[in-house]
Each structure stands twice: as structure tokens, then as C-alpha cells.
Length: 77
Ligand SMILES: [Zn+2]
Image 1: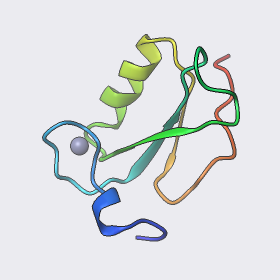
Image 2: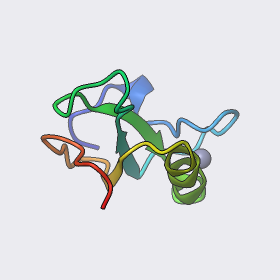
Image 3: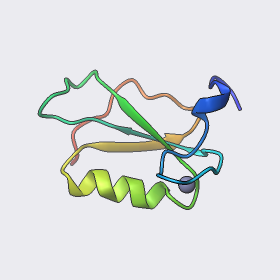
């Protein structure tokens, strides 16, 4: 794994100890500027769950492979 410390490559889903394979980049438009990127990490099983959770709250979400860091998270289309 590239660019992550040992403790940060685990899936962010509660109770999951799988290695993260996906980087879920998101932003709360009410409190974050467009340059701000919050990150959850996800294994293959929890990627869709975490993504849809954020999406259901109206947050822009951009999923990338875990070693790809986007410059920003654009507003949802
Ligand atoms: Zn997981």
C-alpha cells in the first residue's frame, strides 16, 4: 500500500477490519469549502454502503482507488 500509515488503511465502516481498497472523498457543502476533502476508507464490501450513506445526506461524494488523491470533490450533478 502506498502513502498511508499502518492504521489508516483499514475500512472506516464500524466494526470492519478489512483492508481499505477505496477512498471515499466527501464534503459537507454547508460547512466545507470546495477545496476541503473529508475521507473515509472502505473495503470492497462497504464501499457502496458508505457512499450511499453520504449521498443520502446530500453530500458530494467522489470514490477513487485508495492511492488516488483527488484535488477536490465537485458538487453532485
Ligand atoms: Zn469494510
